Length: 384
Image (cartoon, rainbow, N blue to C red; front, side):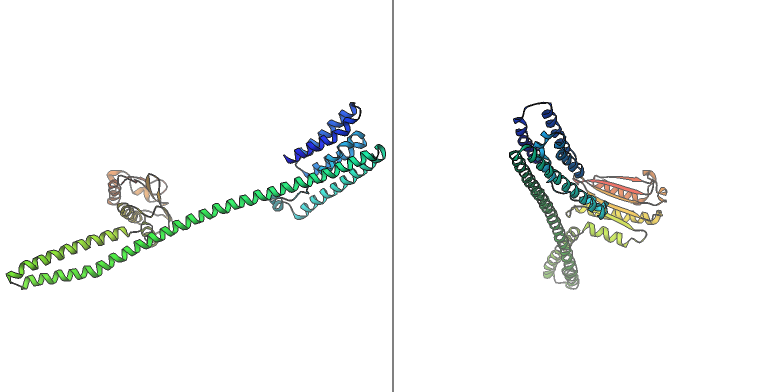
């Protein structure tokens, strides 16, 4: 747009001497020819064609002397920045080809400037010193205007590139920060689960064993002690210890259930499975319902057993994905012996029936496909 504005100003500046002369067909032809060459120079994207148009505009005064007024437009075109090879050109074109293009453009520019200089000298000899000074100052102004416009465009391009790079870096930094925070949260949650598991083991191994020993000692005392006065207190002590033992047992079970990490459990099962390699695609949130975790772990165990027993698979894949409204579980293999496992409910084995019962207890759906390998697809709603 800036180049169009500059050319419009130079065109108005070039028309002034033409208006001072007597109007005629030659003046009209000169005006429209200059407009055509300027339009072609603006239209062409190739620098060589642009310089050719500028050279033609510089040589036009030899045919139409009135065209010398439009010489600043030719100078404006010749003062443009030389073409720089793009990234695609740098990859696709050899170095000597790029150098030849730049050298050819330089030669065209030098020839154009020499032609414009010769035209100026010819005009000074034919139309006087005043017109020569006017053309010289106009051409000088055209060169300065082109230099300023190219510099502004270059600075604007660098600014846009810097802004885009900065925006890209900010987005990349935000994404990395989000990934780090998610990783940190997962590590904290995993550490919490491990600590709960350790505490449950400590309670079970230490406090549980001590309470068990105390209960046995109280039972022995009740057996050998026949004093009626001690019978009641010993019974109360035995009941208290039993209640404490039951309370600790419930707490240990709750801690152990909450400390189960579904991803680590599935990876452990897959690492221990030696029949064929199994890839895992896991995208679940860290906090999951206890029933869901035990259901998927049990189904994975049964599915791996079926692969080892009934399939001749060389590879298998497990996908556990969390969607906005449900959990998706897919276990598939490329075995050829899956047709022996019928998908009909009446002929299913105990393992598949257990899978379906577990999924039904969570209000989910289970579907089995035996074409091109064996595939178990489970969808469990989140409101379980």
